[in-house]
Length: 201
Image (cartoon, rainbow, N blue to C red; front, side, top):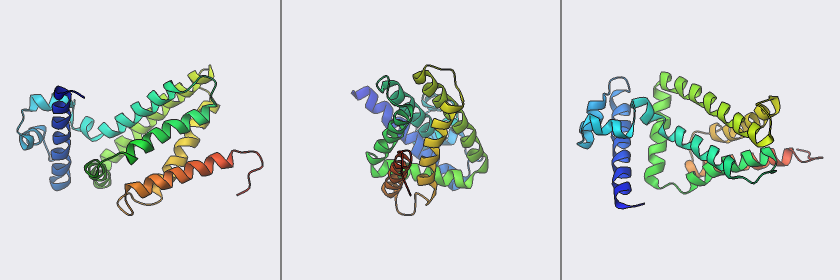
């Protein structure tokens, strides 16, 4: 990453940090783009160079995760079993979480707290997740050489459900993000074992 890219990344993260602090302090609806920009000493116009809206800022991590999964699926070798490709996509997310700095982790936890405190954002997150699942189904179907069908839906839903179990069985702020990553990995291994012929729980 060159100097210009590093400066842009620094500004983007500063805007995210200022916004999340303001959202948690005074509420999402009560916080304006002008306030966020002012907290970082930039203009609202600069804010919109990085984010199209407050919603875009809140869901930035979600969108990055979707991009990571789709890029991973696209990079997997032809002929790989589709569920294996899907688990590789999920493990790419887990690796990003393992590589996160303490600041990254704190930012992630703030987003989780904001979701808990703001029902409309949580509802929109669910809607966004449905769209992500649809795009993953399309990617899996393409790898299988078919139109989106029930099996493609089942592959994606099964893999995401396994991740969701590990993600939600204990809040991330209880035990830490790395423990959560370990739980998700354990859940994925359990699913992989359960698909083997003759496996007995």
